[in-house]
Length: 204
Image 1 (tube, rainbow, N blue to C red):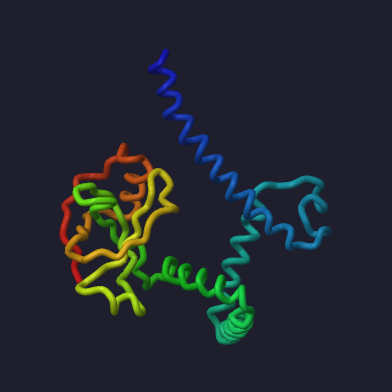
Image 2: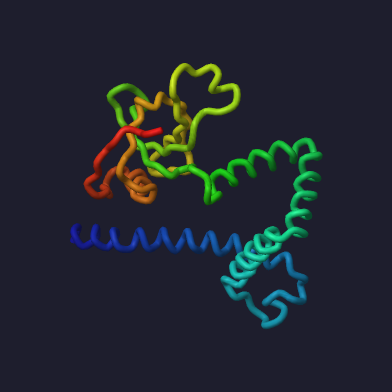
């Protein structure tokens, strides 16, 4: 009975967590229906709520925002909007920081989280998986002697929190492992091992 119970858990727990995450995402995106006038909302038109309509509306808003921002007029409007936000004291610091991070993460030309690394952390002889995020910039690089790289060390089993470190390039090992495999390895606490990988030093 214990064997059957564990087998059932292994099947149902991932399914339950997946459904919970999807429900959370869809429920959050459905809030975009509140942008519509009340008489245009599904509850008013057909008398009941249809899950997922807000998600479709959110995706359409994102798509058309990107479409409009690609032309000259849309780009000009976005420029004015960003210039306005930069003039608001508190909003300026928040918006600029979030935009810089999002541009780095989602830009097709960016290098954030493109490489999985093996680093010694939190002490010598203790190894963990990290992600290459770039190289130190600004005044920071003026105080670092030698060739350094910026890495993000995620926590387990929640990789959305972690530590930002600047390490000598020679102390970092690049793994023959894509980011998805590395994330699965981290989230599973090493249970879901990736395929046999060959490690190589990080190259310039």
